[in-house]
Length: 280
Image (tube, rainbow, N blue to C red; front, side, top):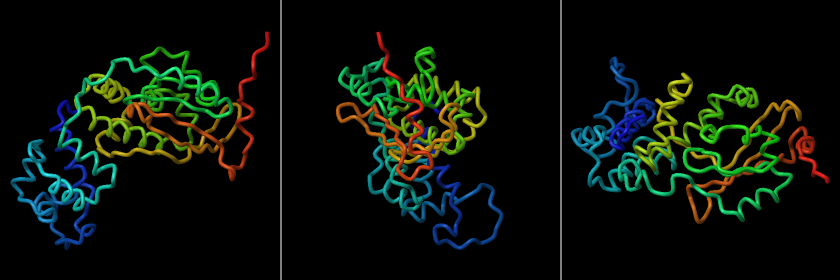
């Protein structure tokens, strides 16, 4: 993981150049051998209307006083998505304090009660870097009992890459893994150099070749809704739709809920996992 936002900025720009061919942006392909994949630096500079020297400085991480107009022009030239465009702005501005906020985020008690009230819906709250902060019994029944894990292991990305049980749970593991890394890359732009993220990325890079390959791609994404397929040991094959909501009073915390869509092949499968109320 790069330790400075300048390194992140340069690596991100180079990675976006590398994924584009001249034909993708309306340039002729001369057929000459290219030493690096994708667009040449001078081609991107021409498309964005900046000098090659200026683009070189940006790719070296020197973004001081870069204008919004230049960043917007680069985003258009590189065909960036909305999330990628916002990520580029954050990397260039580096306005967030990596140490801002409490080291141990707290979930408000009313939110914990809300999770418990959602007794037929798997739901959990994550904080920065996909750390698991709170969850309800239905989430534990579907995804595993996270109470059994040491606190430092309660992280969605860590579970996806390092837990064999979670890998078996998701038939579409490759897509899920890419989504997790894309979300971590977004956080890297918000909190450059944050020690918690550096620690997590170092661990995952050391333990997972798949994580290393995905992290090197510099893809960024935030999926606020969609579907996940699961192969549950009790309920069998599940299709779950999810919705994720960032909290209005703490954008670092995110509430994720899951339900079976009406057109799913087994709409009643979650009932097999609904915890029964205890009796005295």
